[in-house]
Image (tube, rainbow, N blue to C red; front, top):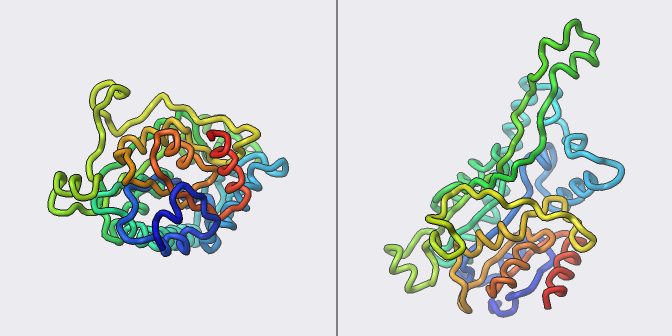
Length: 305
């Protein structure tokens, strides 16, 4: 199908099925926030089910993420025996294979030299990188978004022992099973160039990163700070909202903005990538499996018009 049939549209469906319909070397870059591995441990990787379970976290019946983490995640304490490690290992390998299915299609539709920027957890970003490398991409960097807040904080030894009636639980005050995670990983991956940077740039209008501009004080580093999460509101109730300012920055950094370039987000969610692209004057394509999020994204786009 012609790429014009998809431009500036949100397609409801499984990203793998939609990506297969796009023509070769038609996309200039990808910014995306796929499901994180700890959101769905212990079940088959079905995106709609992931969204359903995570939406439950945001409902009145479940006020925290940790309460809804299934056996095997280890994020809320629990058993850490051999079975746990085997299940955890099996799950992360299944997750990697799932990533490879859509990474393969991205490789086909992206222009040579195009960048992919993938949000993921600090635990699983390495597996994202390996999955993309297995499909032919080149790992370039990891951008650190320092968001200064995070979950989970892990098991509290003092409180756990106190509930168990143990003697002198206070001696374990301050001991937890995990550090507070204040940053989020953005894996930076690139489709191989055609001979060199300049040759690729002149042929396909992509291949380099914009590291200097009036908005950047000095040379852009791989650590991004002072961008807070956008607040949920009546228009956008998505559970893992990424800041519009952050997505704008990633797009501007990796995709030259002109008529020949298109950014794609195969896990569009509530539409932040589409909103950012439209605001910047860049063509875009969004794919989202959850109809409720599609409605939110469409409304956000409509408000801009």
